Length: 377
Image (cartoon, rainbow, N blue to C red):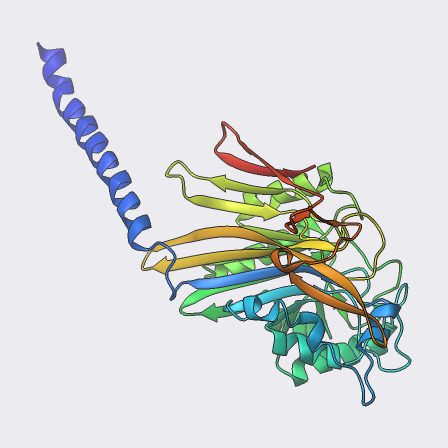
């Protein structure tokens, strides 16, 4: 009797906690419904690699300069829906002579036309950012700042990196820290005092801690990594993704392979998105001839915050494609939603009924761990 009496308060406490845990789960479910994606949530769009090969320079040439607006016009209405759209700019702006692969230098008009098309943030930590040495870095960063387009990944000095990194964006009261790193610069040295964000886990861990001290609501890491033209991410990418998640990153967006790679969306016990990774979004536009390089993904992420409640409210992707059209004056390039694609290419096939289909398809598996894994085959 004494034993039972002794444990009665404890049993009552357990029942009380169990009851309130169920209530908490019900409340969380109600909150998710109440704060389902609405027009006032923050929408973040991400694109992959923007390339500028020689034939693209020729296609954009006009009598008075260069015009890239027609290239991006079919996709621009979608990009403008976002609160901010982020893309990897895989070229530099060092003035004439303009050059394509392997040492890039592009017209300034590309950046102003990208901004007009809806892209508001550029990722600069990639393997081509040092193609034109100090001149390319200086003129590129000056150009970005002159037209007020956000950018991160390369800095003029250690002091500038300290002041500007992590890149913190406040959208509708939500503080978003954006991190950006690359595996290297194709062997080109980074001229001092410029700072380039190499993938270094010690530095990355310190940067994540700084973002947390800055009270970021969400931390996003954009990683230039992986193997070119491989549709399956490698073991190092997966290892780095786990490292980033364990340190506190919420979203990982990958670039560099030039083809789409797998996506993982991890859920918590309440079936809310805990974190996600898109290992590669592929190309936005290029003249690369390899399989799957003329197709990519537009990643659309919506985040919300209300008091102490914050969440990745939704995540979806849309296929995009680059059409090469023979028009008067030569070949032209158009980036468009795949649903508007009208021509077959090495990466995009058109069915007999006119319906476009990517040559890569998502296969979705629900794993016991609560992960939705999308693999490309």
